[in-house]
Amino acid sequence: MELLLCSHSLSLRSFSMTPLRRRMLEDMQIRNLSAGTQAIYLAQVSQFARYFGKPPDVLGEQEIRAYQLHLTQEKKLAPSTITVAVSALRFLYQVTLRRRWNFEDIIPAPKTPDKLPVILSPEEVSEFLVCVSAGKHRTLLTTCYAAGLRLSEAIHLTISAIDSRRMVLRVEQGKGNKDRYVMLSPRLLEILRTWWRVDKPQHWLFEGNLPGRPISREAVHDACKKARRLGGLSKPIMPHGLRHAFAVHLLEAGTDVRTIQLLLGHRSLTTTARYLRIATTKVCSTISPLDLLPHPAPVTASLPAPPPSL
Image (cartoon, rainbow, N blue to C red):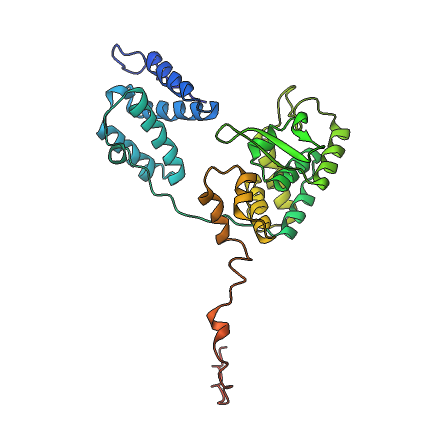
């Protein structure tokens, strides 16, 4: 990832970016932000500084406003992407530079559209997994669906995470640096055992091409794209879609929302409850008022003949 350093060719007066970058990095480390978040925040602030060719501590409200307009109108980034830049700038100015601003007004976050994910049916999940050609990718994606894992969590599963005595999988340091347990399906256990006999992994359950490293996210995403093309599936399918399918299929099978929240590792029950808007047992099973109307008498009058062109 890019670091919070501007090129020495820029006219930065006597200001050195290194102390500010180091201080921001230390502030994030003190708050135990994940390594990924630290890298993303540094990259976002670096892009902001390079856009103006000045260090961020000499930039103010007008520059921040102009930069947000640049991201929105010129680069046409999605609101979710702009929100990441907003979070990085808020951290820099509020925590590291200690500006006493009203950050809701100075660095506003864009309103993000409330979109529902496209959900695969159980039959579509089965068809998709069959189309994944490589055994490693198919086993990993099957694990994502069977246990509701995020891709990053599945990638970083270790051999010791499989507890066949208690029939659970231990997810270590998932989103928010939280550990949790999820159920280990007997069927999934057999699949994982078969995979172990084939690949003989030593530490990471799904090792990558580099020795001692887990498989990359890019490799899994590429496998999803190939499987979708091979199967001729119309719905968009990515690893996180299997996690969505896991939650909705459990809900449709009668599992309560609180249990699903614990399995998914959601901090808020509200996040999990959004699946209630998707589950067919909660939505499609409701009778439409149209079906409650009395049936009208059949129309006996003859309809006019369609024009010759039809």
